[in-house]
Each structure stands twice: as C-alpha cells, then as structure tokens.
Length: 516
Image 1 (cartoon, helix red, strand yellow):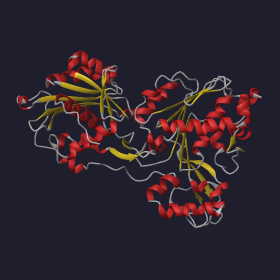
Image 2 (cartoon, rainbow, N blue to C red; image 1 turned 135 degrees about the vertical axis):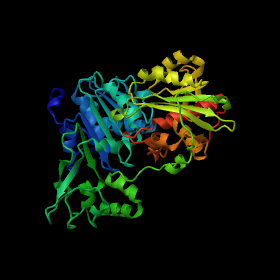
Image 3 (cartoon, rainbow, N blue to C red; image 1 turned 90 degrees about the vertical axis):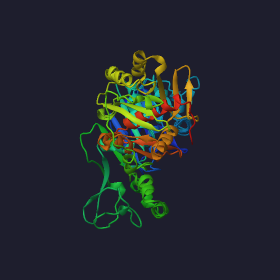
Image 4 (cartoon, one colour; image 1 turned 45 degrees about the horizontal axis):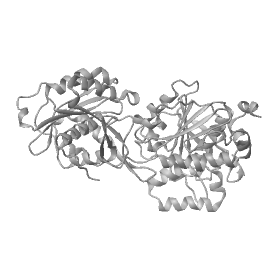
C-alpha cells in the first residue's frame, strides 16, 4: 500500500485515509482547498478568518507528507507552548488515532509519541516547538518543512529567518505560514504583501463581474453578494486568481463567507450577520473576513518625542564637561540582518545627570548587516566617552558582544537577552547574561520617555530615532497577552539601543525595580 503513496495527491490521501470527528474526511464542502492541498509550493501562506479549517488543513498536510515521503521531517511552530501542545494532542494526535489506516499502518506504540515529537514507521518525524519573539528553543532542529501556525503572533525579523535555517541542509526547504490577520503592520500582512495574493474569485450571474470577498459590503442578507449589482454569489463556482503572479510565496486568502455551507444553511449565515452587528469593524474584518485592518496602538506620540529635544549638538569627540554626569553608559543593538537588510547596528550613549535623567551624548547608526564588521568603531566610540558600563543585545549579537568585551574589558560590558518570562530581569550565571522580559522592559522604558526622563539633542539629529520608536506598536495575542511589535519592513533598532543604555544606567545606579 505505502509504495503507491508518492503517486497520490495530498487531497486524495487525506480523503482516503483521514477521519475527522468520527467521519471520513471530505473536501466536498471546501471547493477551494484541493488546489491548496495539491500544489507544490516552496512557500505557502494561508491568510484565514477563524473557523475555516485552517488548523485541520495544517494537520492534514503534515500527516499526508509524513506518510507519503519516508524520513520526511516536519517542524511545527506556534507562538506559545500551550498552543503547540493543544495542536499536537487535539489536532494531530487525535487525527492519527481515529484514522484507522493511519493507526494500523503508519503508527505504532513502540515509536515515539510524545507531545513534542511524533514518529512514523517509515522514518518520518514531526517535531513541535514554539517561539514568539525568541527563536532559541527551535535552534538545532533539522527540518524539511517548517510550518508556522498563528504566525500573526510571531515576530518576523527576530524569529522566522533564524528558524528557517533549520532547513539549511534539506533537499526540500518548504515554508508554510498560517494565521488570522490583525493590523496592517503585522507579520502576516508583510508576508501577504510579498506573496501571490491569491483570491477566490466568483463570477456574478447577474452582471458578469468577478468578485472576491474583502469587505463587509460583500455581506448580503442570505449570502455573499456582488459589489456591483447585489446579486447573490455562489462560492462553489469560484476559482483562484493570483493578483501578484510570479511570487515565490503562494498565498491564499480564506474567509468565512467563502464556505458554501455558510450561505447554504440559513442559520449559519445568520451567525455571520450577528457578528457583523456585534463585532467592531476591525474584529469582523480580522476574524470573519480574514483581512488586516487599522494600525497598531502607539503608547507615545511624535510630538512627545520631539518635545524631548534640546538645543545642543552631538560630537564623536566628547565635550570637556563630562564630569557633570555621575556615570556615562552605553547600549548597543546589534544588527541581525533583518528583512531586506533593514536591520542596523546602533550604539547609544547616555550621561546620567544629577537628577537621574538620561542625556543623549552621542549615537551612531551603522548601515551594515554584519555586526562584527563594526565592533572596532563601536569600541572606539564607547572609549571616547569613557563609558563605565555598556549593555549589548545578546539576541544576534553574542559574538559581537564578546569581541566588544575583549576591547573594553569584561567588567564594562554585559549582555541582555529578551525573552518571555515572569520576572522582569534575572542574571543567568551559566549564560553570563541578563535575561529580561521584553514586554515589561519596553513598557517601562516607554514610560521613562513619556515622563521626560530622557533628553535628546536638536531635532535635526533625531528624525530617524524618532521614526524607529514610532514604528513600534502594541498588539494583543490570541492568548490575551500584550506584546510590542514592529512591521518587518520598519526598523526599531534606535529604540532598543536606547533601552539597553537605560538598562546599563539602572545597573550602575543599583536600581532594578520595574513596574508591571
């Protein structure tokens, strides 16, 4: 039986072998899914509303690929441990267990069946992990496909390029992304912007116009309607159309109104009408239509940042009045390469005034992707100002920080690693680094800025740093956790360099108290 599997289409395998809720799996009421199941896409994105079989599809893709290709390695990534465990147990595990042929021919009790690792008799394996803003947990895995679920809650620049390196030696190197849209600046919207932007288009029987669903104006009283004449559309008679053909990332947009049963069963369409009435515009677009909407919330305004500027200049050679500061500290946000090379290395120097304000003495933005290449210049700048203590980003800057220590001395340089944790800040002796909760530190430093605790030079120097700060916005994850994000194409390096310098100031002042 298994010898014939590679010749089968994935949709055929799913319908022949898989069971869902005790019944044989079928795509008959999902006419838009066969093309997604059967396409050979190097990169695949599913931009979906809620309850459109996204998680079911990801699960089925992984199972069919695992039984169809011996020794194939799938790596599943969601934003949180809870989400990953839920998918592994209630989606993947249940589907395998309640599908008789899968249980009989491909799984066995003498193979590994832990929540975070599942194996098949043909040598295929599926690893499950999680990462939101820190990719370290997934490093070291080897994969032929990385499958990101709820990708809207995963930071693109900090996480995805790092984890995709798990496929560096694979003959396949497939990437799959799936999630529900949020803001126009979110990871999923960035992926959509560079993708094929494939929509399910339906021809109106009334006027002949082709329609796809991305606005609530398509919501009629009994089903989706034509935007031109108001005639009811039939989702079963649609077809996929690429609005950006030629992209290496094939992206499909799937909304609730596209499901035929939602308009064929009046009670189901009534639920959509109820959501249209009760939900906010943004929530309806995100969760029902699968469309990004609005901008993320900012904690600080451009005017507030501009008001921190004072009438003085910056010089690479320090002025002669440095003795007026109790300490001089620095922060370095090392470049990680970033999306399309936008990530830069930034060094920032604060002088701590007698009233404990942080006065910007100097900063420099290096438009270079490799941080090691600028270590010597960063060290020279910090030495020029006789910085007593410097904190550098450990995320992608571990090597650069060690080189900086060699030039400045171990006691003058420390590393800080962002991650999600209960305590705002802890010292990790084994890693010789501070570990910090990213959201808590960003919350606190934003409040320092809002309360006027930082002094900037003339506005003419500050246009780029202010833009970096305004690129950061607030979102709430699927689990209800508040997080700070920035669009993958909009850098935030100047903000984090300041934050690291602020943390250096808190260390030398022995002030490690945080709110929140």
